[in-house]
Amino acid sequence: MKTPSSRLYDLIKSLTSAERRYFKLYVSSKDANSNKYVQLFDAIVVSERFDDEQLAKIIYSGQPVETRKYSELKSYLYELVIRSLQSFDEKSSVDYRLKNQLLGVRALFKRSHFEDCKAILAKVKKTAAEYEDFKVLVEVLEWEKKIAYTQTDIAFLDKEMGRITAEEQVYLENQANISAYRNIFFNILVGIRKDVSRSKAQRESFAQIMENPLMANESMARSFNAKVLYYRILSIYYFSNSNFESFYDSSKRLLDLMEHNELMMAEDVSEYISALNNHIISCGRLGRVEEVRESLDKLNTVTPITLDDELKIHRQYYMNKFRLCISTGEFEEGANELKRHLKTVEKFDKQLFIKNSFYLQYFCIYFGNGDFENALESLNDWIKLMAGSVERKDLQSLSRVLNLIIHYELGNSMLLDSLLRSTYRYLNKSNRLSEFERKMMNFIREAGKPHSKGEMQQILETLKQDFEDLSRQPSYGVFDLFDIISWLESKINNKPYAQVVKDRFLR
Image (cartoon, rainbow, N blue to C red; front, top):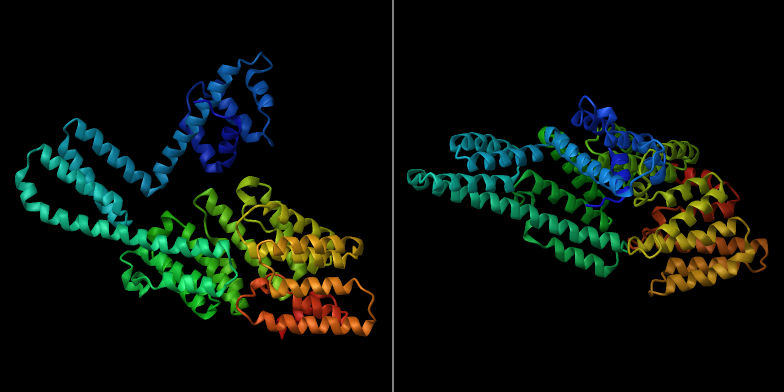
């Protein structure tokens, strides 16, 4: 297999410190330091950017590079790193241990060591039951039948087939139960991510999904993992309906469920991180600021197991911290947190990070501090990032409105006419022009005309009242990110935007 150099580079750069140390132990030998694949591994670890030609020069010490041999070296190292990761995971993951134990059963069975097979299967079955690995449990039963058949143990089959059939049925039903909950969860999740307009059609669609008998109550979930999915479904459903009290209750129950299962928490914290994030959001929606702060501290104490866990903790901590600073008007604190965040981001692979963009939050923090140039740059970065994406159409539309606002603040009157036309074309192309968008563009258009101070004051006050009415409608989630009503109030009363946000929050 010819392995592209960038894949090898990205793989090695993604390894944690523990995984890198383990690789060196995995390949340790008397001449390990002189092996070219070890030299290539070390060269990639210390490199700051991908440069295939420079790596080749380091490995071959200035000697002519044989392209075929260098490609083979990279391919060999790529496969070796994967094997070391498999070995690393076997020591730290129950899933890998179970799979390897079953591979051991296969090897022993092939050599007719049937009693040894049975001893290993007993251990596998006990562990799989503790961790609710129903697929492995079904496989254990298959091995029990296969061994008995090979040994022509009719007495065992006669005595145990009833028990095996009953257990197999339970395991298959439990697995199907989890799968069914997972499908419900993904159906709602995809609907929310594609369109968070909370339209009547969307609410009716979600309500129909929730009529599934599995969502009648918690008892329909047959296992711990199914119960986790049950409460995750409730959480995102209540969030989509703006039923924030129920969203809070379901997210809190999910956290309690997880925190009382230390065995599962030690194996996988990914779902717990997501549940904690949802709980923080629910507390924020209900104005439980102290509980938000406590939960943020808790999120920061979670020990990541994987690189993805580390990324999720970072993303969700800072997204919620920024959201807290933006909603409370603590923009100076937000700017300090933003500096720390940007410094930490440097150690992550950009491609892993960029999919979960913070750019609109950057915009709000810079805007709140009156740093309009950086606010505009962040906004443009987000617009470029989301070009052609089907996700978050609501925020894509909002970003165009924010673009008008920032150019209005910067006094770019020459640009506003052309921006208004291009914004209208973008918002109207899919019949998505909302009342909020229409009123905002009318305001920008009117603001560009000559008006007396009193006339401008009246225009601002009328728009503020209109937006206050719109903000009470559940379909207008656009007011959640950028406090446009505070912005209008700051213009009406000639006060700093940050001060108005803070005052409104305290009221």
